[in-house]
Length: 87
Image (cartoon, rainbow, N blue to C red; front, side):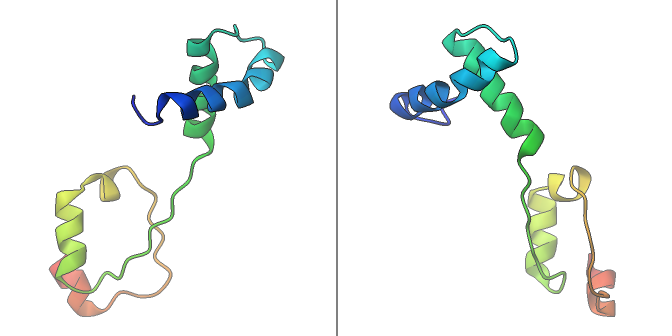
């Protein structure tokens, strides 16, 4: 809710209307916007890169537990022993 100002939301709805019709959805503003939100939820991926060393990472993990609980975490390099002990 309130992600876009009204004029931008109307532009998004206009851009998505043809796709919504092609998949058989009603062409009401609410239904078309719902199709847009559904597409975003299915296709949006965010990549966060953080160093595991130091207090900042620990603080972020405590402040935003979803970084650990609701994400896929890929470790590309071995963690330093200090980081493993502190986190």
